[in-house]
Image 1 (cartoon, rainbow, N blue to C red):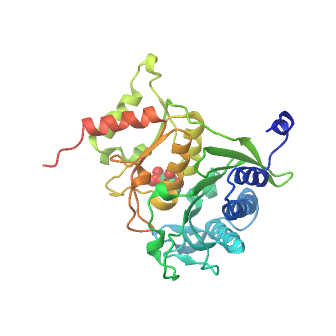
Image 2 (cartoon, helix red, strand yellow; image 1 turned 180 degrees about the vertical axis):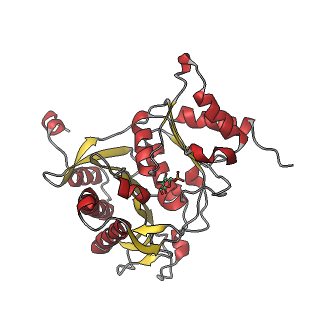
Length: 341
Ligand code: P6P
């Protein structure tokens, strides 16, 4: 970009088109998909930011596939994203936290599959804490039979063609990657545009923040207990004790980790034997973002994005963040691994 361009505001739409032009063979379909998600995000942001003065707060009386009470804004966000994806007619199916099975779109011939958590952290809506939307995009494997099948969506995270999140916080931030690094945008409500704020975000190699719900301490495996105690010990040279930060909205906790470094952990526990967070529309997309920014994401045994999924709603434990912090907790898990009796 020229000096003048460097100083000019670059909108999400312009940036996507500029990025697409770097791929001579690009058809523009993925760019269109990302622009549609950006539009839905602006509409959701408007509702989230005025939720306090409309009757959109509170529960709608239903529960989602995980038995969690669904809030009205969840449904609104789900509907906005699905209708945006319908518009571009290049998505064949959507899998969302808010829908038990796959949502087949009218454009059943579309080549993309979109996973999404329309409004992650919705339990925080009523107390005005940041919440977010998460999306993960795959290409449908070419098949002779054109029928839409759930099996087409069971692909490991390494097959994602794009992923990202929108954080509805003190400002509305959108982060996405297509595998060439992570770009950050901030919504300027006065002009209704996402403006480029960082074209290539890098996570610090190490951070002095750990993020975990310590309420489930008693059910953690020994290595994790030892690691958290290590984080709390006094050692000025290594910056310990680390700071504990936990928002309870994964998008907000991951965004802070991306910017400031450190580690976010949601382990398996007695209450969540497979972990609470969902592989396909929370952990895979956010792992793609963190890895593309130079970080790491594991389930405690192996790379999150190499997990072969068996269910569209499956759960996984996750240890994600700065490479030095993730490597360190893995060392503790191995060193103090529980030996089966
Ligand atoms: P807990 C929100 O409900 C969510 O799915 C994630 O956004 C968040 O990281 C996690 O659950 C919080 O779970 O058990 O700590 O309240």
